[in-house]
Amino acid sequence: MTVIPQQVRAESVCFAGGVIHVRLDDGREISLPLNEVLWLKWLAKATPKQRANWTIKPGGFAIYWPDLDDGIEVCHLLDSAPVTAN
Image (cartoon, rainbow, N blue to C red; front, side):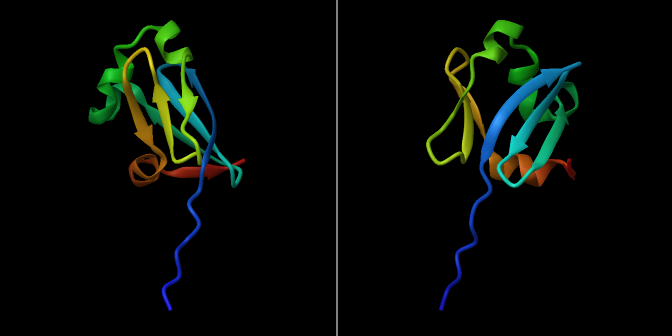
């Protein structure tokens, strides 16, 4: 029998000092410096207004910025950063 792990979901996003902070539904938070992660350069170049206009895709598997027509999947965030519990 195959067991499918439950996917952790994004709940909220905020930015502080050039760092993106993503709160997960299991209480953890992922924080990544935008200028140090190559695949986040598009988000580093965005204006604060563009960054503030985000939405969580149904199911919580990804965060999407409609003004930038781009997004981030939670699984990629988990693969890229240490995760801390709060």
